Image (cartoon, rainbow, N blue to C red):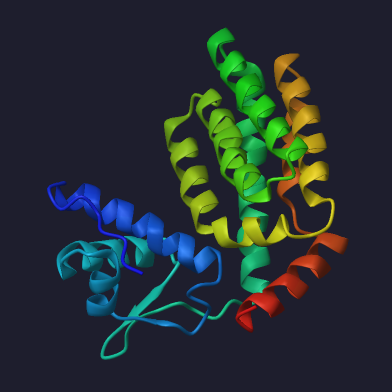
Length: 229
């Protein structure tokens, strides 16, 4: 089924939207690992020219979500658990730093925005809507990045967070993970609001880390994902 985009939109805007749509299909398994992403087929699917498709693929390749190789074109890479865990290890440290700085620097307006994002996650949890929770979870974490008042750190954290989108989504498939995630958010919000930088740092590091049972769950989810489940 075709999904025409606004053909009058500027190419950069069009390519950004295309990138999001292709990323969504990768995340949901429509394009499983090993899939070759043909520019013309994608252009036909989305009802656009090849130019914004090419730009979108370059953007996705820049964050490592796809691979572009000479004579092979763009493909969705196979996922190795060790590599994913290495990325989560770095993400945990970036998030921890954001939390520590946010606890020290957050403004009243940013506190209100963080609380609003937290309550939105609560509504998604209560509605048992993991896809909605997944999207709102990104907003919650962005509020913390912004509250760090370190633009470079926020930029790096957001970039890696985006790179890990497929795997964060996989984690939410694990039983009770959504409820557990929200409970962890609650403790993080409270630590930031009372200005406890050390606790906020520790809680965010633990929230993102993939160890023990989480590692086993992620490996199992990756195995299914790579099999095109």
